[in-house]
Image 1 (cartoon, rainbow, N blue to C red):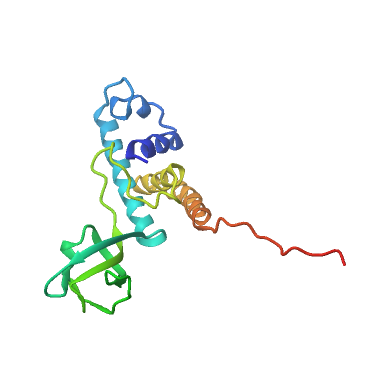
Image 2 (image 1 turned 60 degrees about the vertical axis):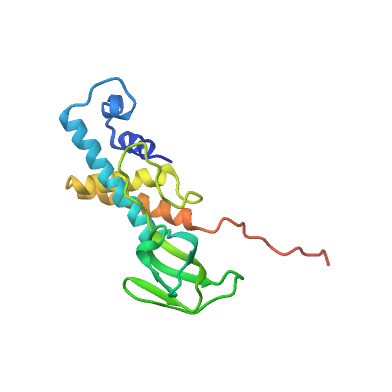
Length: 189
């Protein structure tokens, strides 16, 4: 899912079909200054929604193998921006005890496997892939959030509340268990 796909759907939700015709979004018209500013605002709203999804509703998890001769692992050396360390294991998959400090963590091994939640990167261009939980997050869900944030940014609080309610419901559906409720097989006696 790319940023441009979400912004195009958000433009449809906003009813701004003229914005869909600009070259920035794949159309043929040259964008005006107002349209360029609106696309920038929509991109800001998109970043806010992606961060909110990862921080509050659907944490992004990453597993990484690290090594350190001092048994101290600086968070800046991790592949992604660390929010919370979930598990630490040795190379044989045995759980390890660890301590977290503001800038690093310590453990008893020099080579470890770490599972942690991370903060997604901000979208810099419209062709950027979104860093979201792809198995649960749809383009529609993100576009609902972008639309709600856009109305809030414009000071249209009633519209923002209505779209935010739809966004929250879509999150509940995305987080719901997908398994069906099943009854045990019964006999005829």
